[in-house]
Amino acid sequence: MGKTSVNISIVLLLATLAYIGYYLYAQPSSNMPSDATLENMLANTQVFIERRQILDGVNMDVSLLEDIKFRSLQSFAEPIVEQSVGRPNPFDPVGFSVNKSDEI
Image (cartoon, rainbow, N blue to C red; front, side, top):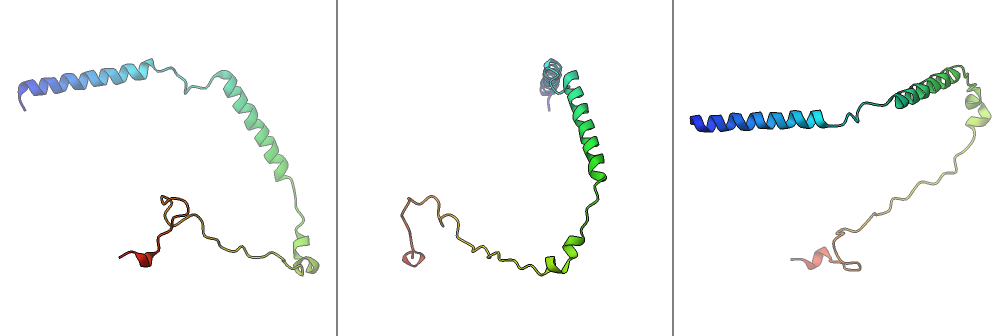
């Protein structure tokens, strides 16, 4: 590369870095939360900690699930039948169908 092209490249690089620096400096600091937001986050965290402590103190009696009467219950659920979804070619006009055997 010639001396002129090296100088132009350096000037363009410095101009680009200066623009990026100005852009980052001129940005409003919107990613810094305000004091009210921080207080709200701390209050929500405290509520979460209190509820977690309450839930940790809960003891569940699961002996019902092992009872003979509970285990003898039968499920009357019916299996879900698989259905086709959509059309083979969604871009065909509605009501238009091409059979594969018609194509050559």
